[in-house]
Image (cartoon, rainbow, N blue to C red; front, side, top):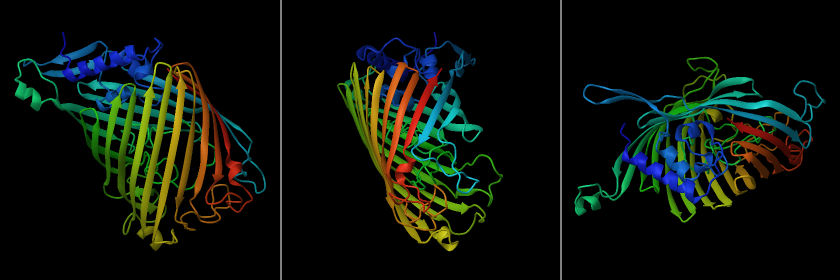
Length: 475
């Protein structure tokens, strides 16, 4: 009988209590992790991809809790050299979508003409996942994605983790009372190797797994976002980093990571043909506290990064850089009842921009700017079957006519302002736990700096209001 470490026995027990206490249905689970753990997806998710407290524990513990037959390797000295799932925890994701904007977009080639009004993407995205245990204490979430709009296949969000307990807490057999007092606290240590700052985060208030969890890939989007947000200019998957974290008493989280440029495609080694290339290492930090009681949990935290970036796009990758300092605060509240599930999310990011390179090369009007992002959302689900969400978003900051130019099309800003704001309303129906049918409406009251004629081509912000229909399958 193979050895099962105390931390995973404890986690499995927690999972069992959650499954029993929440009366989850015996439906098929989210594929990769469900195949590995044997648990329904409602143990880890409210409505996918949002995590429950146990889902966050599962992620923090390195994705390694398993209920599969293992292939073992042991040396003559009884040192375990291999512990591999006999069946790989693989799965697929398919998204099929329809997008309609209130006003048709200008044709990209013919002056005065309009593009097709309404577009189906089949698929919008298709992904292959390996998600689960690699070896004892080592696990991974690896996503390969085909993007229908870009007609491109490549690596998507990826997070590889190694974890160990430095202190497990609780009195063990044979320990004295004094020793038990010394070990009453638990402290988990983890290492993460990932390609997207915030993809390693177990809360849903940061960019990689934040609301909205899906959206149109062909509708117009604002021309500005902070580096740690999703949107234009975000670091996203143009970086690779390694970090270490501590998880103390299942409540206090602290992480420090460092990222370097990791662009895919184009010319390598990276040269002036690339754009927005990280120079040196970008430090990223995360600190937060979660409290759990009854069926509720509350998290408050802060995170941030300092990025030195060369503009590239024809400029040599040397000399002065643009320096971006992002500091953020966020919060998440969850109520997970037998029938009613409620989540509140909020995040605020402030970014200081010191544009030494862009200003010197006439790519920015000002030597320094700032940018601010605010997002908040409330989500509700009844029996994990019918639900909806309402979100608000706003981006504000310094006007800069060169940084946010008038491009002569729907992407431009006649005022040079990055200001955009609006709301997102959606309704979800899940006939099965791994199938989501979604109707989403995104409305803008300001887009790229103005409400009316924001781009100087007669297009109003409300012309970018978007109806988005989605079929999202996991199998």
